[in-house]
Structures are given as structure tokens and as C-alpha cells.
Length: 263
Ligand SMILES: Nc1ncnc2c1ncn2[C@@H]1O[C@H](COP(=O)(O)OP(=O)(O)O)[C@@H](O)[C@H]1O
Ligand SMILES: [Mg+2]
Image (tube, rainbow, N blue to C red; front, side, top):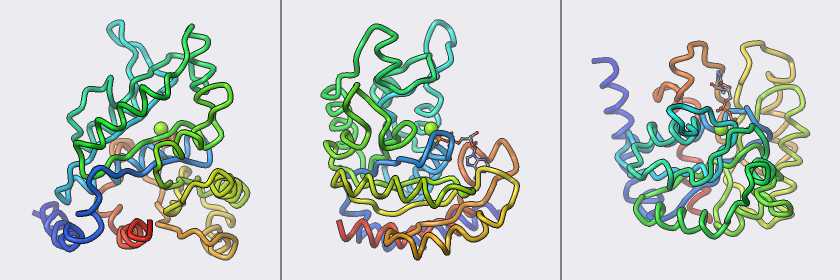
């Protein structure tokens, strides 16, 4: 019964949104990037997807290229893409959600080259076009950070620009994030990308003076809004997505809605 309680309150709290920003989003998307690999992009994207799904939206997802895939039954399994698909309920085949899958854990351009191929950006754009046409909103997860190459001289920042998607930046809340996040935001500006906001994510159970003060320092350092400070999740199971009541509490959906409206 308790579980249903938050679902109902979630649905009623987001109900208004159906007739405002989110209702106007059909065919739109958000590009989820990060300050690094392993900072929580998939966890945040999957949680946002699950949250919007719980509110009744049709959520598309895409992980254009996934490297470091494990092999099962002779197939390369893109774990991020599978998690995004499961969390969102996106019905598209995994081959469309994640057209390029490589075994080696390397930047896409290098992994593709070493596998004897090359990423076809037009094919990725076509997949995104098909997915986003079917869903209220589509969440696209990058790989690593903005300057990771998809082609030898073509980065995820270039790709996000061509997709015309605003960014949501996931940053590991730890010592060093002031520099990592500032550089990411600065590069986004250089590339003409718009940034909806960033999320500070605790990827470690250890607290530090830096982690405790980063949010406040960043609010003076950058004009970009902080959409939330997500805590460390203890249990493995809930790391697939944040418990949605916790996500609702810590992630400022109203602010995301407002900045989307300004796009
Ligand atoms: N807030 C958190 N609490 C606990 N574990 C986390 C948290 N955020 C991320 N992780 C863990 O850190 C690892 C990297 O997260 P992931 O979302 O895969 O990062 P990315 O997509 O940026 O590479 C995963 O094992 C994930 O479960
Ligand atoms: Mg990921």
C-alpha cells in the first residue's frame, strides 16, 4: 500500500505537467552527458526515464554507441542500452536503441576502428529520428563526456549539436568536480550547446568536505542550474534506478520543466 501511495502522489503532482511543458514535448529529447565515464549517466537517465514513465509519458531512449559490451550467446550485450530500455519501457528493438556495440572498453571512434569499421553518424541520426517521432520524449545517453570522439575528429558535443538536443550533465560529486563540471559547461558553450542543468551525483559512500560544499560553490561558479544532488545508494538492486520516491525528492523536476520551457 505504501508503494502505491507515492505512485499516486507522483501522478497527481506531475498531472499538471501533462498540459504544460511535457505535453508539448512530443518528438523532443534530452542528451545526457557527464563529466566522465562512471559518474552515473545511466543511473540518472534510467531513473528519469522510469519517473516520466510512471507519470504516464511514452519515453524513448537511445545509447547510440556502447563499448565495453559483454558477450552472451554470441551477441554483444549493451548493458546501458538494456537498462535504459527496461526503465523506460521503450518498445524499440535494442539494435535501434543502440545501433553500434563494441566489446573493447574504448572511445567509440577507436573501438570502431579496431573492429574494422567506422561510426555512421547519419545512421544514428536516422535511428534517433525514428525513435523520437514515436515518443513524448527521448533520452539519449552519450559515452564518457562531451569530448569523447565518435569519429576521429567528431565528438559527442558535435553530435549533440547536430541532434539539436539540450544537455543534462551528470557530475560525480567529489573532489575535482568544480574543475570537471566547469570545463564541461565551458565546452558546451563553445560548441553552442544549451545546457538544461547538471546533477551532482554521489558515487561513493564516503563523505568529504568537498562533496559537502560542492553544490554551494558551484552555484556561485556557474550560472547553470543544479537540478539535484543525488545521494549514494547502498543496495545494488536499487542502483539500477533510484527509488522513484527518492528521485522525486532529490531531482527538481519542476526546474527541469521550467528550463525546458525556455528552450
Ligand atoms: N548515486 C549512486 N549511488 C550508488 N552507486 C552509484 C550511484 N551513481 C552511480 N552509481 C554506480 O556507479 C557505477 C557507474 O554508474 P553509471 O550510471 O553506469 O555511470 P555512467 O553511465 O556515467 O558510466 C554503476 O555501478 C552505478 O550503479
Ligand atoms: Mg552509462
